[in-house]
Length: 338
Ligand SMILES: [Zn+2]
Image 1 (tube, rainbow, N blue to C red):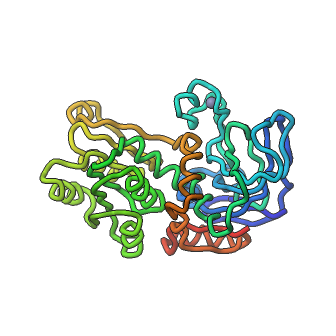
Image 2 (tube, rainbow, N blue to C red):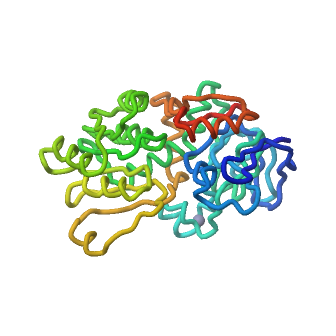
């Protein structure tokens, strides 16, 4: 089969690779219904993360089980499944506490920008749907496996509750999903920080009530202005830079919470500053597995449409263009038709 390999900065190739097979008794092999490009794929693509050898790309997936290892009991061939981008056993103490992304057996999914993929720790990682989903739900089910699950964790980690005033830093795919998540959790006022028209429109569609175009100190001032000088109850940080982290920190009120899911690059904390800021911080790779059953239900009930975050749909074989479009910000997120 042909699949996506990253050779180095800006060098994505769709080329012949060996078809995945069951390697361990806890594996499953699935045929993907669709795949996509993640914002985090752009870090190595842009040369901001070293690529020592060609890497199999892709960690967001949903599709039909083709084969399972001897120990797998929760899914079977023919099942339509959605999994998390973090592979977990879902039985260890950290998994039991709902932090499957810190599983004692944690691995990260790779090789999902392909027609067929191997999913290790299948029992702990995959959730089977009750039946084959309607075709039009595939983008939203795919979104659940990472981008929506990550936005949802940002809102959960920030402790979003009904009636709250919240802010979202970042208008990338995850930021937009954080807006949708805050809406689902009942936030009253949702301030989205965005300076791009098309992203503002999508944020408003997902439930944002206010748009702030300013950044940095000005952005913080604007959030304070909108909240009578107090700050937001909860802020979701979905970028990962020093500036965005500061915006999140000081856009929140004292005692408020920050859920941060942008992978930090060059972010540092000062102990004294944290001490006097009095904000709660929780972040990291999202334990999407905790939310999967609920998020899948939200999609199957047609309550939400997170798949709208994919504003470019192209064939898998054109994956290199999918990366370029996101790198050049021509697309928010690329869906790859398998
Ligand atoms: Zn575990």
